[in-house]
Length: 92
Image: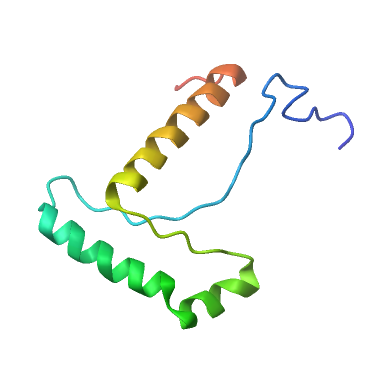
């Protein structure tokens, strides 16, 4: 698709797209339950078995704290907001 501009050519120099997955829950989950679930997810993501299952997909687990993940999600929302605005897309 040689006619399709690159992200830099489209005015979004340095823009990077990664695929990521995360665990979300409903608003209001008690903090102690969030921490307990996070410990379980971190342990699973650090296990050799899970790493071995993800490796063929070129997926690398990146466990974090709930606060770090919330910050990451906010940054992703801000990044994609820029792309949506630059595209001119609107809600119907």
